[in-house]
Length: 78
Image (tube, rainbow, N blue to C red; front, side, top):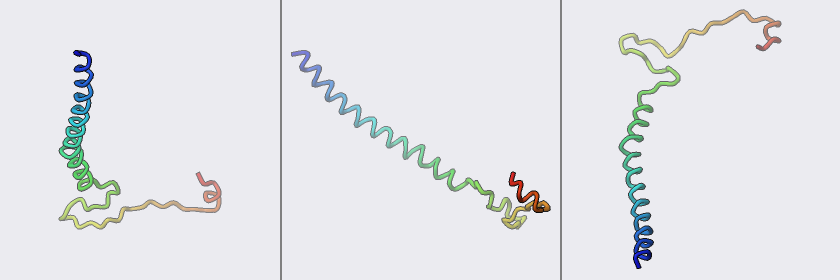
């Protein structure tokens, strides 16, 4: 009888544990992961196109260095 009771308890404990883990992981996601992702998306600038300062009024263009190109360098392609 004690074994039967123990096996029923294990089934119930597994269901409770699965429910608890879903609740805990859902709360973790919405409390920690979502705000972090929103912050990164709002404040990150991977292409460096946002202006650095409001007083400088610089454009988004970056200086580009060019080289003299001739037929030999065009054929080299390295």
